[in-house]
Image (cartoon, rainbow, N blue to C red; front, top):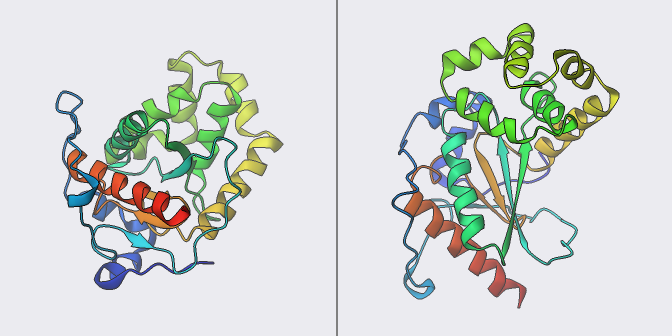
Length: 234
């Protein structure tokens, strides 16, 4: 990994690598759009590095966006119990702070685990990226993930969503998707992704499932870090 996080006492969790679905089982709270989070004043918010969020010892170098918005990079895996609810929280926050942040989504991939990247980029190639969210919600049930991770089942699922099965297979096996999978592997390594969900704010700060389980708390931490980055940029 090219960067090391200040994990403190929670560093031990990283030793489990991508078996962190166990972690994702903890602290689940159903996201509610009927009870939107309340943001306290920035002056009264106080969160601690190593407890509420983590920091890269050396920030990830990123090309600045033309719109100057702060990147919130959401690394996910379809084999994740809380990624769908975490995505809901991130999307809500990005809507609340649309003038400040840009939410970007990336599938986690390794040499031995490429299903998420392959399907995500296949759907992108077919201009059906919105189906990724549908799949992420479905596979939050472990047995459903186990079923859909089989090649014939995911192709059948795609057909049930209105996609042409043959076009899906062609895109899935295209050189472009293969290149994107390789890019995803490199990005996963560059960012030191060791668990999911894994959210990087401005290339400096990281949130994991230990924070992304509660709408009020998660949004408050996100806002704290975005304001922190804005202050650091001045």
